[in-house]
Image 1 (cartoon, rainbow, N blue to C red):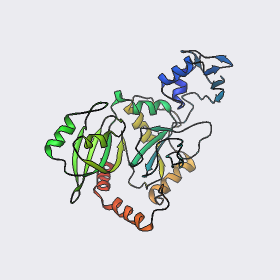
Image 2: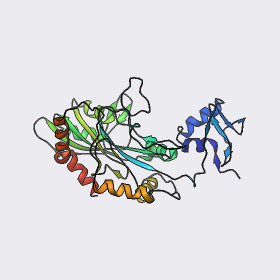
Image 3: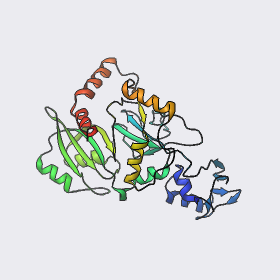
Length: 305
């Protein structure tokens, strides 16, 4: 008996959502064992699968080690595999994979920073991003202006944006002085620039935005800008439980990889920024803000939950 449906296998390997893969199959762009594929075909190890003529290495779902990376995105990097303008992308600093690929979970705009998750499991990525699963994202946001109690009620009850109703699940003050104040907000969807647009709808401007949590994963307090940490079995299984995916054999870190992550956690690597032309003083200022800002304090609270 064949292992799984073709469109599910392609989605799981990170080539797109199941619906997208169904369209690719319908367009005649997929072949199995040198014959044209159809919706509902089932595949197993040993089958030769090609998409647009390129061979796709198929591994049974239970054989492929599920991996997840937490990356601290700096400002100036774009959430794309390639950029026509030549700007740095979030994929450039990820570890290389053989016969596999990293799939990004959600996005952050070029001026936003913080937690980005990557996985080699396309199905996991798809479920974590799908609005029906209502996966919570948390952000520390520095706002130019004051969020009055009336504005807070409006933002949590719902605002009509150009692409529909949107709202924060929660909003709390995070401190700050003068006209710039920090707030901690939660969302259960990931529309384009949604956090910024919600504040802008109330005449407020976001001057800094840092994602501190995605689902069950906090931005690790030992992680520095431009660096990544690979998650171990316990954290990955907690994440998959959120979207009703079964645990997989071999999940997590083993051997030398596990020891390497322990060393990184005990002695964090220095921050790396996308703009190497920044002055040393700016780097030092950023480190100071990281250790003492309301945003970093908010992250510490999140990590202690």
